[in-house]
Image 1: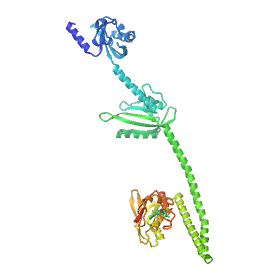
Image 2: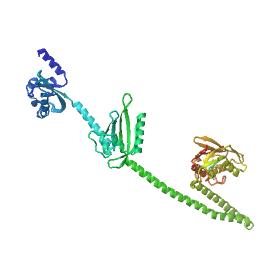
Image 3: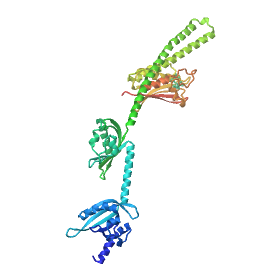
Image 4: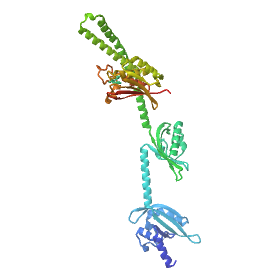
Amino acid sequence: MDGEDHELLFVVSDAIPALISYLSPDARYRFANRAYLDWFGVRPSELIGREVRELVGDAMWALAEPHFRQALAGQKIQFEAEAAYRLGARRWVHVSYSPHRRPDGSVAGVVAMVSDITPRRAAEEARRAAEERMQLAISMAGAGTWDYDLVAKKLHWSDSHFRLLGLEPTPNREATMDMWQSRLPAEDLARFMAERERAERERTTLDTVYRIRRANGQYMWARATGRFLYDDAGRPVRFVGVFYDINESKETEKRLERLVDERTAALRVKLAELEAFSYSLSHDLRGPLRTMYGFAKVLLEDHAPELDPEAQGHLKRIERGAARLDQLVRDVLAYSQVAKENFERAPVDLGTVVADVVHTIDNGAVRFEVETPLPTVLGHGALLQQIFSNLLDNAVKFARRGECAVVRVYARPNGKFVRIFVEDEGIGIEPQHFERIFEIFGRVHRDGEYPGTGIGLAIVRKAAERLGGHVGVASEPGRGTRFWVDLHPVT
Ligand code: ADP
């Protein structure tokens, strides 16, 4: 090598961002570049001819020497180690030893190249720590993760995934599809697969619940959320997700359901008892009432001459009171019958029901306009009779005084229902009373003017509900009222 070649070698080796040195077979420095000298803070004259061990320290040399020996034996060697740095700090380095062979094959020395990989190591360390933290969080949340490589057909589980199933994690955390599938009841597996297929097709998140058998043979409830990852060509390449233990919440849910069922059953029994009680009470009340009413009437009719006008007045009040109470008892009985009895639903022609009701209540005070034909509905004769006699009774009762008003009955389709309207031109109802009038004893108008018990509309609502329908009202005070009932039509 002439002087210029030497110069070139120095320039080039100094420009390389790595520590380069040439070591003789007895492990002494023959050459070192600028980075090398800077690293140890030495001058070339302090380095050349010195033993490597002296400079790097015994510990580092103990680590490096076997590799150096292998290089001397003709092998190219690489390793990573934590090395001392001149400021007392420690750095991670990547070392490569390349044998320098003579033309005859013997090794003249070793070229050592050392790069500082501390930043890469730190980044790796940070990533590992982050991964560890995430795995910890996932396992603390009672969750495990899976990652299925659809191309290589390789399945990986997190440690917590294994542990949730009561299994020991495999060394490389590899699992098999069968390990998982064989633990699911057939119907849960089928549901999962259908959901998985949908998530893949529609590129949505899979979110499903299933039972899975743990290592101890017991089933646990799990919930899985997962997603497919696609390559640039849009092919699914990975299926990744999280799986949680929801056993406890499922168990609580089941306990609550059982509790609700038990309470509901107990309530039903109580309600039935109460209904039976009120029914028999109402029923038994009617006997003494009839006696009161009957004897007051007998007194009035047969003994009128012996009674002065005041006594007659008192008797009339007893008679009226008894009659009113009797009506009340009858209405309560009618209501509890509608509420508690079992009714079989069958097709009923509304035209016939309404015609019958109109026939009984028509007193000539209003004019009825009933649309024909009215539809046939899925109902029950007695319940429909209750509905229309109460509504039409009211339409007649709440007509404006001295006017021959019209009461209309007609039907219109309303989604899956048919809506029957009963419309009058009577005194109307203020909107704030629309809800109250459907309650038991919910009356708006004073009894003196418009007699009644306030049970009629409660019966209408209950009967409509028993037929799977609803009721409602629209009204304008002074102009009229329109009640409607939604019922199931028979087509
Ligand atoms: P009742 O007719 O025995 O009072 P309902 O339950 O049938 O009891 O009606 C409750 C209240 O609703 C009535 O007292 C009345 O104030 C009001 N109402 C019902 N139907 C009509 C109607 N067609 N027009 C005006 N008000 C009505």
